[in-house]
Structures are given as C-alpha cells and as structure tokens.
Length: 288
Image 1 (spheres, helix red, strand yellow):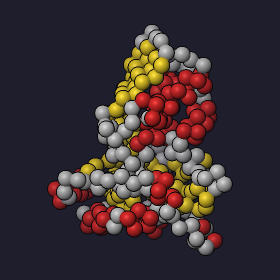
Image 2: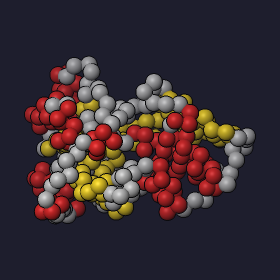
Image 3: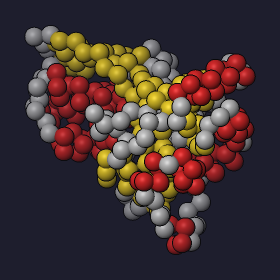
C-alpha cells in the first residue's frame, strides 16, 4: 500500500550555548537551551512497495542521495524496524544551510518520526532518540517538539517551558562549519567559568534573560566574520530585547515578547539590509 506524507521540519535557536570541555570521543560537552521556531523546511515522504531509498532537494547546497542525513535516517529506521519498502524523500529548503539553525538535523528527525508513524514501525520515543543520537548531536532535540535543555554532547535532554517569544532571524548569506567553529574554540577558561548558574526561571523574564544570553562559539565566528556584531546591534536598535548568534552561526536572532514589535523590526531590517541577507520572522514552538 502506497502512502504520502507532507511534514514540516523546523529550525532552532540556541538561547545560550556554553562549551565545557573536549571529550575523549572527539565531541564536546556542552550545556545549551534550544527552542524550535516556525521557520520550516517542507519534507515529502512517499512510501511504496519495493526496496530502496531516494532523497532529492531543491537546493544545490544540499546533497541528494546517500550524502543527505535524511537518507541515513530512513536507512536506520528501516533497519531497526526490519521493514523493506521503497522510500522517496523530497526536501524543499527554507532554512538556510550551515547557518546554526539545525536544518539538516531537523530533517533527519522529521524523517525518523514520520516514517515510524507511516510504517507503523512501533519504535518507542527512547528508540528513536537513540537512533537520532547516532546520527547527530542535535537530532534527538528535534523529536521533542518544544524547548529543551541539552547537556553532554547535546543528547541529554530535559524538556522545559518558555514564555511566548518571537524571534527575528538574520542570515548574512555565507556558511559556517560547525566542526570548524568547535576546532577553533579556546577552551582555556578557568574552572570558575564553567560554573553555570542557570535556572529555567531566568528565561521567563526578559531582563534576567539578557544576562544569560551567551554563546561560546560566537567569539570564534566573530573573529572571522565581524559583521555578526553589527547585525546583533541592528536587531537591538530595531527593538529586540536582546540578540545572539545561534549555534556555530552565522545566523543571529533578536528576541521579542510582542508580535507587532517583531513584525515591525522584521520589515525594517528587510528594507535596510542588502539582498545577500535573509530576514525571517518566527515564533518559538512550545510543547503540545
């Protein structure tokens, strides 16, 4: 029996990101607060009788076929559930690529969950999270459907609730490699810098929130791309309560509690920045 799904695959922002240490397995121990946002890729999944996986994308910046993380996700799901089907995946990109927004990880998570439902594979959330963790550090987060604190290499997750936030995102049109950012990070901070006095309640108050918006990778990316600082300043000047780079960048975001203020800022920034920049108005996604 054939079936077709059309799924939305969201981006994310990091409300803070602290890098604690380099691990023996090559990853880094981190603590970060992430929230999915309403900037989505569109993923079409077709399930047919037969065998084999195909993945195509409308962006030349994203690999088709087995080089795509969505392909690997489908492969793992079929193997784990011991199911043979022909799977055709088409991805329509709206999330900028290599932008600190988790687009590839989100696509993989969306495919895992979508196929699990479509095939009635019966894998539990724990099993899906385990598969996702093998695919990439951010993949499990996107399965939760809302904000979470992430620890370890990013796969130790705790669901949290946040106020209703709107975000204006600015992507300057160039890519930043996550591995490059981590490899160029200075990890010589003293022990006192690794004490992380964060409480989730701090992120429910806009004034307290400003004190905690720190991204350790921002200093790395700023050295190569100082424009990020001016984009953060532009967000503040247009009414954002605070601004930060997401992930390894280069996308920056401003936080708003008022939808109209966010809309006004988005319009002004679209008019004021050159065409190489993409500006998005998004809302934070909360748990159902």
